[in-house]
Each structure stands twice: as structure tokens, then as C-alpha cells.
Length: 341
Image (cartoon, rainbow, N blue to C red; front, top):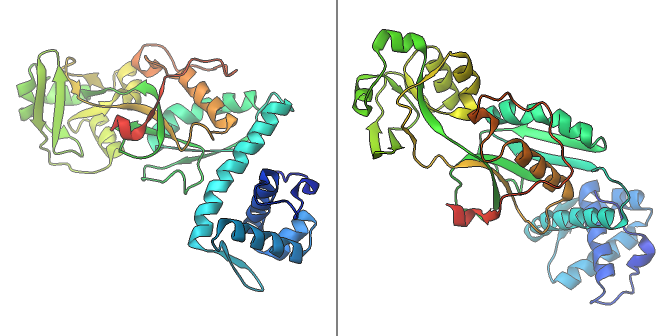
């Protein structure tokens, strides 16, 4: 819950057009929802239950819709109340962020930052950098969730999420942090046993491991579609990665996911001129540019400084041990996800 505005500024006699009064009523509404009852909210705010009830009635009257179903023990949000609560939460957080910025109360970030990321990428290329970010901002708490499920970041309460590949059409805003390349590769033991393909047509003689029925590849000579045939089938990209490393066949894998194996020789690239067409990128997505909290923007800048147009997993350079984050990094332009798809 955000910090309450001083209650004297929330005079119940304020008229309908009084923005301060409206914000005070909204804060009380958010506190009632957080507390689970008007009685608990009244204890938190140092008000009486009748005052809380009157303020909620006034807010509902102004909006022309019922937000809460009341009972003696608890409150239940109506459908309109659920949508209103979700939206005002972002507004109150942005308000707190603006107050903190304007008053320059601190040079560090505060509160909790909630981030969602794909499991493998988050483990390999996000989590290792977060201790440095938290060292820079000791007053910040970061909640990281790793999931490959299609999670709605708005209803899940996430400030931003990382997504990889081609973005589906949505109302989210996206910022590309790094390109993604997918290359053909295999274990040396597999190539020693079955031979290294010299031409794209040779792939038809090999075990091709993929969750997809075909590969659309591009090269300087043009595009080609390759049917994927294998005795090993799975929808898990991580299972395919492990199978390829252990010599089960040729895979089409993102370089960010196999950079250690390519570097130490456990995997070798084959047909280097070919890679998956339209592999997309690593994107940060969020619900609103205008209402994005400063703590989320700062993490976004931090990650952009680490990844970049030629990320470290595409080079022979080791993963950066440190990255500075003073908010001065150049950012790639933001896009609406609907325009990207």
C-alpha cells in the first residue's frame, strides 16, 4: 500500500471536481481492499468505520458504480471494483514515485520491484546480474518470478517482464534489449558418429531435434524450409537442449542458451551460414510508459547496458561481472507490441 496523503487534505466537504479529495478517497479505497475490511482499514488509518464507509459511498456516487459488496466481516470487490482497484494501484504507485522524485528524498530506489522472466534465460542471464543491481540500490526489494507460462503481467502485478522471440499482438509496450539468433549445432560425438552436414540438403539424413514440425532457415543464398523428423519428440526446449548436448542429434538453439557449450567445445555449430528466420529478440514489456515506476525504468536501463546490440553471449567475451546504473544509458525506442507482431 502506498503512503497516505495527509488526511487534512482529504476534507469530505471537497466538491466533485476536487482532485485532492478524489485522490484521498482512492487511497482509502485501496487501503480497504488491502486490509480486507473497513474495520481493519479504519485501524490502519486512524479513522472510524462510519467515516470510512461514508468516503466509500461518496467515491461510488462520484463514479456512478458500486465498487464493494459489504458484509459485517469482510468486503468483496464487484467486477467494476476489481478493474478499478487494479488501475488505481498503478496510479498510486506512479504518484508515490513522482513525489519521491520531486522532493529528492533519496538517490536510491525504494519499495518492491516485481519482475517476470522466462525460466532458462532468467537463470542464465538475469539472475547473475541482479546482486549487482541490488548493491547499487540497497533500499530496493526485488521479487523475481521465473516462468515459461503465458502470464498476464498486469493482473499478475508485475512491473515489467522479459520475453524472448516474436511478440504476440497485445496492448503492452515493448523495448528490445538484445537480438536473438538460433543456430544449428550438435555434439562432437554425434558428428563423429554420423558425419557433419556439408550442405543444407544433408539435414534430411540426420536426427533433427525440435518442438517444431519444420525449420524456416535463412542464409545469404535465400530461405529454405526443412521438415523436422526425429525419433525423439518433446515440447520442452530445455529437454531438446540437453538431448543435443548429449549427442542425440542436431538442434536449432538460441545462442544465449548454449554459449558455454559452444565456448568449451561441448557443442559445435554446423552449416554456419544458416540460422532461424525471424528469431525476434529479448524484449522488456510493460503496461504503460507514462506510469512506469522509476525503479522499473532503472532496471530496464541496467539490463540494456549489459545486453546491447551485440550481447556478450554472441562474442568471446565473458559475462560482465559488473554494470553501472546511473540512469544515463541510451535506450532503444519503445514500440507497441501490436505494431511489432
